[in-house]
Image 1 (spheres, rainbow, N blue to C red):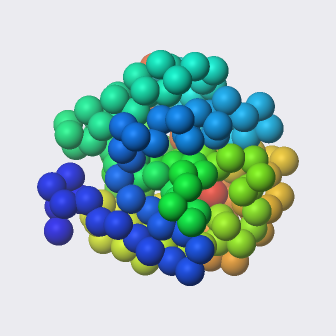
Image 2 (tube, helix red, strand yellow; image 1 turned 30 degrees about the vertical axis):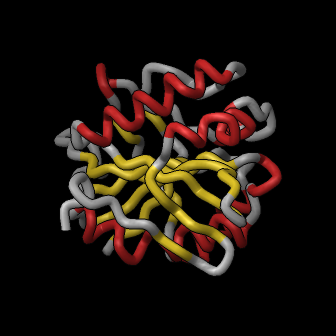
Length: 184
């Protein structure tokens, strides 16, 4: 299955993951304008920090995500709880000759702060991890975890991720830390 031709939906006990839609803008603005959620966002190697305050900014971001999907750059799913968008996840296959994150599914998790709980993150991982490496043809999976993200760390450890000392080396040689890694 080519994830860029047929993007799957994932349905769990409490959460559903589906491709991001233009109609998610208002609900996702509550995520990306949440000052308590913003420190968790991973903007490594990105051209913005994903801190939005207007509906227009959020709509432009969603348009960029949808364009990037059409180009085969990454997949952005909306995380829904009881049909209400509470965040997004992004996945893509990263290649690099500069660091250990070559042939790696890179996962970004953006949640509204009231949903930043071990059980929510663990359910996201339960939905994504079993299929992500297959969907993206990868041998490992990595995600950034800020040092204060205790609930997220608990969920990742339960799923078998371990902290990595190796930096992710970005465009222009920038070094990024705080990654956790899961090997196939």
